[in-house]
Length: 74
Image 1 (cartoon, rainbow, N blue to C red):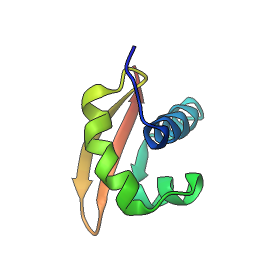
Image 2: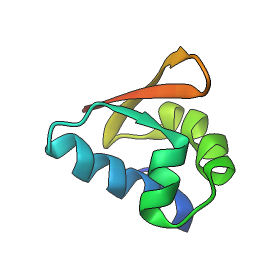
Image 3: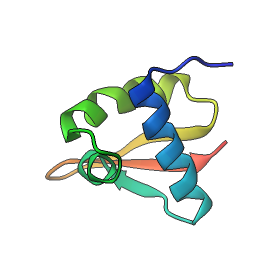
Image 4: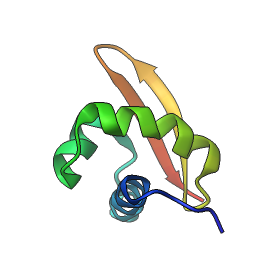
């Protein structure tokens, strides 16, 4: 079982719920607005969650103005 900080738990819960509804692509700003964190707080944690999350698979997808993350169920 992977241990998460409170912020990581909120991010993973949001991603898991969103993926279950069919969403696949996210930006830190969108996640942050939905769960009440700053986009910087989310952006710093997403690469770490990509390495340790057992709930969803997170991968850096593209970088235009901001990084887009592709999230799929495990």
